[in-house]
Image (cartoon, rainbow over all chains, first blue to last red):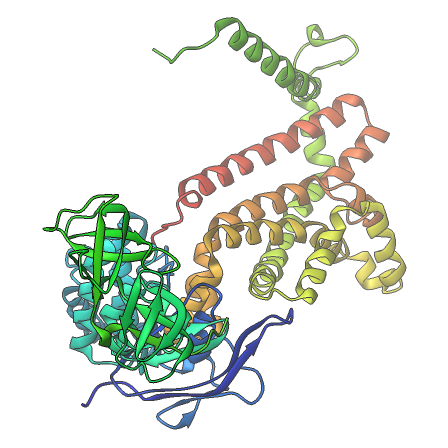
Length: 351
Length: 269
């Protein structure tokens, strides 16, 4: 697949701040040309620091290096890296109108007026902010500001597009809509993009690959499906989506639970195990004759499905997604059925 | 009509405000009135005259002119030094930056006389420099710089200038372009507020100036002290009147300028 922009390689980049705080352990990562990679993790996991190192806003500790198309740019300041950056707070210039903001990078590059105008016009259409060119920044809504920031960042045809939580400042409905537009834009431009977020649904919707980070280190790198279905550890399992974590013994290919036995597909190892079961892979069946059973504690109806909490099956209550057509209520005794392939054994706890 | 208002309390507050305002304004007014009274000791019934004002205008025109030159020069120095300094201090968060910030602010706490004495001890020997108005300019710049730096830094802190700077840098702007295109335009309210402070402080500065001046480099406040000491009270009062007449339009003009452009950050070119 041929994309635009550059391939980015981060080599042994660590960051220790002046006050001694270690924000990032040495990280080595490759970003292919044209791919969208999401750096995902809770606050303080080092994702923004890593993005800022790639941008050139932070210098990695000695020994670390950043390469754009195999050219070492570690010592190149941000203004000469030809990156496009979208900030969480947008960082739009209040002293310039929308068109001037979008055209600023082109102006810096000495692009002639006519060409600049044409490019701005093109981007205004691409980002859906036509008609707002002469507005002041303080006359725009949050969503419009976000689009202007995006147009401004891509106007200069950057080598790599860096997005630092670009949707976080927006309300939920708008965030969802803009996420779709952003996805379309990234597919259209096919530019190398590195996207930082703490929102796992954003990460899954946008990323070709997701880099899950935790406490300054990489917890897992994989496609959205990989990290969802095959989390490398308990942290990833719990951070991405909802997960039931069951700590028990495995014996003869099945988990030994208080409410019964649960067959496991990869249940070759026996002894103490940590297993993960997604709420949607547990099905409610008749209690009689079920291999695993429990009692409904609580049901909350959320429209497209209902989420139930079932106690007695495992040590801790299990969260189960139940289709909205099935009527269940607190107190019901239910049987549970789980596809053995959907039970994921996790390596030992890393916390 | 207005929302529920407690009439007696409102009346009391209004009265209090008026009393305080009168307490502050009446002396200034009386002083100015004295400047146009034929004989202050016989009071206003002695008649009104402009002869004292005229006398001031004949005796002290150089002090008035010099004060404005020094105020303008002080403003230029504090702008050229203070705005970039505020930018640098805002972007750099290290201990050294904080130390420099404190040092810049120090003249606020040190009596003007002490600063003047230090300047005299250090540079008093350079007689050319000592005798010129530039010597006073140095004192004024030291004294007013913290006002400019603080006022600009306050705006920087309120507008997240650091991110704006990073945004401009990401688009390829060099340090100078960022400063020119993004930092200064967005620091306007602070620069205007700081300029207002610097000009008025410089025009009215007495402590430092009194120590630093020579008979040939008197400023308006020093000349005022001189006239109080050696002239009729009416002349000194007329001098005060001249001072007010010159500074009040300036203050109003700068306030209007700051109000029309400064309070909205989305300033248009």
